[in-house]
Length: 470
Ligand code: ARG
Image 1 (tube, rainbow, N blue to C red):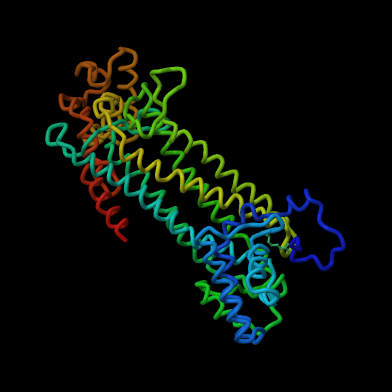
Image 2 (tube, rainbow, N blue to C red; image 1 turned 180 degrees about the horizontal axis):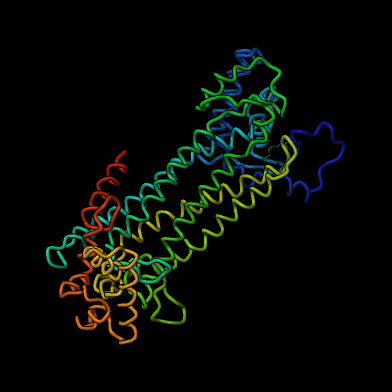
């Protein structure tokens, strides 16, 4: 006997094979098998309490569902060619186990409130893994910062670890510590994690008990049902409940933003591992070679991370476009919600541990980083030197600019200009001007909260470690 679709009654003829294939979602919603059965277990109890099932029927349905749950757990649950979606597959299997009684389970329920429930349960089940992967990457960044700042002093009384150029517009701007650089990638991920937690609260609203759209005609206790499935509360309005996919869009937004943050980090690592920068070397375990050019060592995981950020953004755009302009309430278009969410989840779960591992194992080349700092990067400190001598900052900025211009025309770096050359520009310059070009001193001055000075970096490390503990 071939299985009939759940909705066969109204139809005289069988669905066209290609149309069935297009319609079917089992290939991807099979991932919600466990959630689907849990939803059914809770639903069976709810309709039993509402007097729709007697005790014996309830017990039989529960036993059948528990058997299916176990089959799913042990991966012995099999999909049949006629299973349109996971809901049909579970109901079909229940029929195989307990017979015609299985037909009572769907009383008062629709696949519309069922699928919305399954999908929310799936998300609630999977956010913790993403959260853990984000925490691990944050830990890797903090570990690297701490590791660097614990290096033996590299300069006079210096306990700030590696120093490097900080960039704006990808132009050398001001010297910073490597610890400060690593830690700059920590707060965006922390915020993403907070976004996921915030999102969880909105996911935790139960659609089940909304029927196809208009609500459930049986006296279901939706509060008890919500509690039994671990949701915070039942949904407010049945029309909204079956059509609301905000949670999927929000999930994809957070995923796209995580992708964007990782991509920014990745782009810098790709640059820093190039021969031109030579700041980092990736461990062999996290890089790949070329089939043609024997010398190549490529930062593929970081390039892929950069690339996948685009794909993640596409998932968000795709779903938003699907949702836009849909008539209330359930439309089959909504079936398109799961593929991008599953794909975004899989992408991040694959990517995050690789980035964390690559960061934990990369070699820093402090000499290259320090060599990339030139005295021009202390031109701001030169202006501050003039400010200390009573010159208003705006004027000091202009004088420093003149010094930079003189350096360019004389083809000298700022610390190579003679005192006479300085004094030709302004009489206030004295011998002490050369102290300005100590990059470590420049860094050490920036000790206000959040700054690059070693003491400020140490405060960040302590704070991050405290946050990561919780
Ligand atoms: N497979 C469907 C989905 O994922 C289940 C809901 C079907 N509802 C319906 N009215 N055809 O959206």
